[in-house]
Length: 289
Image (cartoon, rainbow, N blue to C red):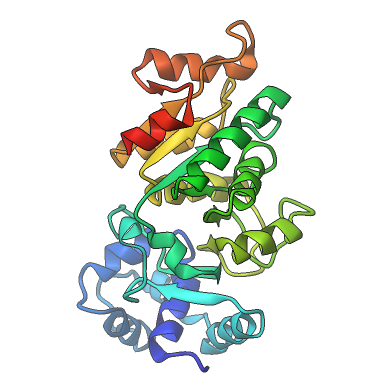
C-alpha cells in the first residue's frame, strides 16, 4: 500500500517544525487544513511565519518525507496523522498533540475504553518490581490496558506483566521506534507490538534525548484514565508524568512508600500528603475507573 498525500503533508510539516510541534499548532490555527498551510509554506506566502522560519522550512526536501514513508513501509511501521479518524481522541484533547504518530502493532489499542499508566523508577527495588508486576497483571487481566514508557525498571515490568496476563499494553517511546533504546529492549518491543502497540512521535531512527522523555510523559498520561506511581524517589522523573496527569485532570494513584526513611520513596510520601489516592490493592483502581 502506498502512502497518501495527507501522510506526506503531515510528515513534511513534522520535518519542518520538528516534534513536539508547538509552533506548528500555533501557525496551523490560522488555517483550515494542513494541506493549505503546507502549500503556503512551499510558496513562501505564509504570513504567520517569519522569513527565517520560512527559509528553514523550505530547506527541507520532499524527498526527506518520501524517505521516511518508504522506510516505515519497509519496516511495518504505521502512521497515524492528526486528521486520521483512527487517531486517539484522548490525544486530541491535549495542548500539543503529536502531528504524526509512528506505530507498530494494533492501533486500536490506543483507543480502548479503560487504561492505566504504570510508572516508576528505572532503578527500582525488588519490592517495587514485585508490586508493579502484581498490579499490572491484575489490571490487565481485568481488561484495563497498561500504558508505560518502556524504560528499565517499573515500565518494563508493567509491560511484561500485562503481556503475561494476556492483556493489552502500549509503550510510548522517547526516541524512534527503530532505535534500540533502552539498549537490548528490541525483543520486548516486538512482544508489546504483538500484544498491543508501540508508538512514538519521533522519526523511526531518532536518537533518545533527555528532553524527549519529559515530552513523552504527556502522552503516557493523556492515553490513560489514571496514573499509578509504584516508586518515585527524590527528583524523580516520574513526577513529570504526574504533573501532566494533574493538568489533564487524570486520577493519580500511589503505592505507599516501602521505607519512609529512604529517599528512594520520598516522592510517594509527598504525593499522598498532597491528596493522591493511596492504593494497596489493584481492585481499588479497578473500582475507581
